[in-house]
Amino acid sequence: MNSSKKVLVLFSGGRDSSSVAIEMARAKYLVKLFTYQAGSEELIGHRGDSAPDIRHAELLKAFPHHIDADRVITGNTYLIRKLAIEKTNNTHVVYPIALTLAVHTNAILYCLKNDIHNIACGYSGYQARKDRYIEQREDFLELTRKFLKEYGITYHAPIIKKSKEEVMDILDKHGISSNSLENKSVFGAVAFDVDRALSYWNESITICKKYINQMRPSE
Image (cartoon, rainbow, N blue to C red; front, top):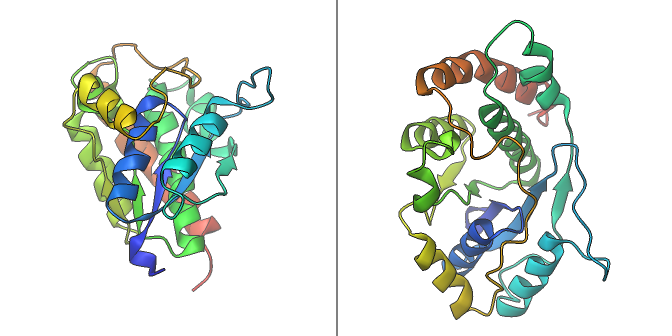
């Protein structure tokens, strides 16, 4: 399949990222699921499967020709250390932004190595309107879009305008469980000062770009 129709979906196994996988599959993209663990392994149920495993199986059943059977699972914490842990004593660290940058930087590298030119995220309208989810605000979404564009990658946020009810409806229509199954981030649902978050983004993005230049495939 042409690389322009491949998409890497940032996938936690939750409702939002699962509905994004559905929307991209419906748009005829070949969907590769990308799970970033940030140092913590997925919670495993008594059957030996995790929330992303369960949702992945449901998505494969619903869209066997558009969902890749293999899921990418990565847990490189190098950027978490550089962006957050090592800065804790000398700067105001905005941990949701640190995690967002780490996830997207590693996703960019995967795309560069595998000839993928699209990334889709599960940022949703009903979350983006809450101050507690600062990384999903429109201004930070646009900063992320600009970051990816520098590497020839188009950023998709297909549910950014949708309500929680609309997201649930997408799942229900295609036989995907609508329970909240994913791990919860310890950095989520906390209010952050927007100006400080923007300042933190600006001082951190150079670290991400330097890391990409060091780790990307040679031309």
